[in-house]
Length: 360
Image (cartoon, rainbow, N blue to C red; front, side):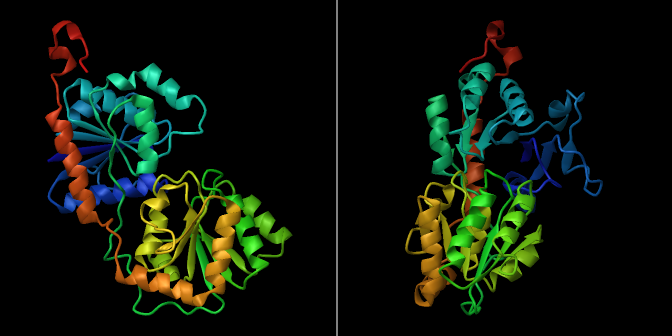
């Protein structure tokens, strides 16, 4: 099968969509499919030309040149390149899937504006989202079916060590883009409040516009000796950190899925996260971790796990013994099921329809 993934942003930019599309494409190639990623992100200069198409502003025939069997567009809140490609592919009769990787609520009138200006309700595409938390706002907006197709991790790569980590003091880890959406500054406040009640060290992995403010906050409250901002680390480095991590914290309320938290859970680490986020897809409160509706609750849960080694070890043992059902085997089958759904609803291309009227 010739699969074309389309995304506005791609590597070397680092983020959830970028890494997921990279991994999904790699898994599909390993299954024998011809897979290309199309993006507006400029080339870093060290990739195979046939695997990534860097589309310039004046290139208009690139989609026809690729001749895909299916187009899979990956969108955030606003993704003009991916949406434009999906619309054009659907009008040409190419089976098209659009996956929403963000939560379309509390972002002002933007989703409604995009829906009405672009006419999303009329598109002959198959809509999916990475979690139920992300899917429901799209259903409400479009009044259309939206299938849930979760993200995935390589369960052979992210796995629990043979023994539960016994770091003393306990170690807390968070991996995230340091932005307001990911709630980087609230994370430092959660850690500060927890430091008043429990002994621990912490590492925050990632970079972004909030890093300088986080560093100033940590200095102001004399936490630089306990909380380290590590910057961007490789997957191998994050795996080594997780082997000595006692608790993973994911503070974002608007996290549509939470790949970093899933990697931690697959590595056996108890997770503290927002009950309002997509992390609740794979973290059951009291079993794999603890979920809170507010920063106060998440902070209390963090202190509880730090202060109660038996509870922490109970969750770590469970996470190590019971892998999450979000490996790539399940994810590939679910994605390809959506491609079959899209193929089954394919209609005639626009130029072949009477009077050029778009149907559906």
